[in-house]
Length: 499
Image (cartoon, rainbow, N blue to C red; front, side, top):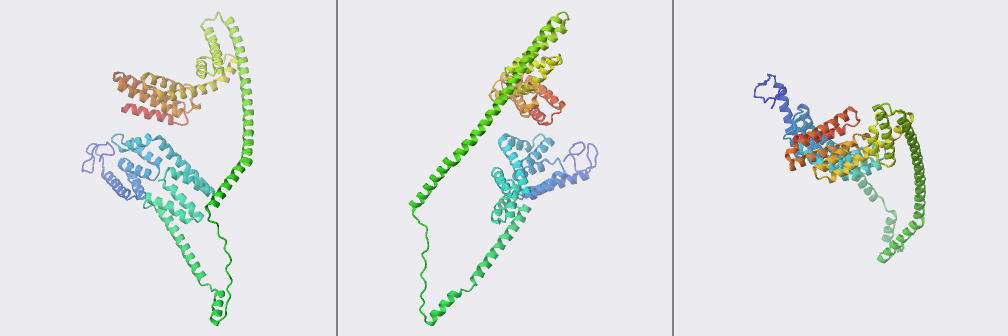
């Protein structure tokens, strides 16, 4: 046990030998936290997950640094289908105790299977959709959605309980029993599941009693006709009982069954051919015609924009010629003005040729974007689109190259492209994934350097840490709404430092 003030190891005394702090109450709190942990562990072993969860929450509430309790709480959450809550507990545990912590292994295993993690995350969203359907009264939609959720994440206890509740609402108590029993198999002492099971048993037993009474009542009804027949037989009358009518029986011939099936298939195919296919073709043709009209309209718009850009470009070239004549005698300033016009004209040419990276680089080289009214208008017309497409192009190129990279030089190209993504309008692309891919490229390059050229590895490490830190500062200073990109980079910085 360590002191809560100076983190020194405590003795049997009621005060810290290093800082002199009174630790009497602190020791009692830690012992109580450990007691709750031990009780929670015992509950977890007998699959009383609800009880274990409650005791472990008390344990970490008393002592937040009790990483054993926090790790076990994460495992209990994961067993109950709550992967997000489990991951939260393990991340907190890892931050409290970075070294020799089982939480590191749990997180790595969970993150190693990214598809599984994403699937579990999606099930929580789908569960929330099902819950909204249930609140709105769309019980059938909620049941369908919950079945999809439970097929993907069969341990999601709250999903089983909501499904059972919806069946109970419909009065289908036999079906409701199945998800309740699955819940109790996962969490043997779930109080809500037990309450639901008690209600289901009461309802089903009540129905059985009613059915039994109904059958008994039917048996108690007197058959007066039969009594009359028996009396007449006893008196010696010859009773002519009516012959039973012929009862229709369905043919058991296998041939007739096959013939009926074939006739049904033929009729179904004929209906599909004569009714459904023409209607479908008509619908497709109408949709196709609308798309053609829309595309033609877009093409006309693009052609008009291109003509307008060409016209503005010609005006700029004319202005440039005039300025060249007038500014021959004004030194370096003239060169800057002419250079700006040259860069804008080159940018327009690159834009028309769909070379958005080249166009953006030329635009970034312009020192004064307000040379003239035409200059400003043309710059404003192409700059947003060019920066957006350039950022997308760099991101896609870097992402594709990363999967093929195998040498230090090839990783340099990947890093270059992904860094360039952030030098344009990166908010218009998937910049969170771009940051993740960039950090991954730095980390893989450093590991490769350690394997191939350990003497140079230090340079790659320093370069990776400096450049990622600069990008984090850029993202932070520009107040990006989603800080996930900076977090992704920080994770890779930590990984490189620990390597």
